[in-house]
Image (cartoon, rainbow, N blue to C red):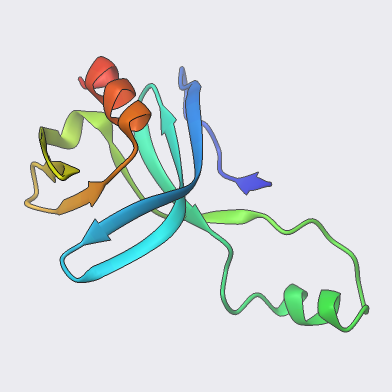
Length: 111
């Protein structure tokens, strides 16, 4: 389950669960959602108080991944490849990923 809201005229293109991303020495697996306007990064909240209640069988609820980072596709300055696909944003932020399908879809939908 994913907890995010689409903006006006926005459509989901693809969802990538367990996508490998890397930024400097930091690396993780995360969920990436590509829309026609944005790239969103989601994961389960680490300190969700409802999770404690669910584990203790106090309540039942659907866990949902929350957006922890997003940016508009128009902010992508460049995408390159050298072992991993590397995205550079106009504000200088860079990250790498390994999913070829995400790369193809990003290239097709860059503004």
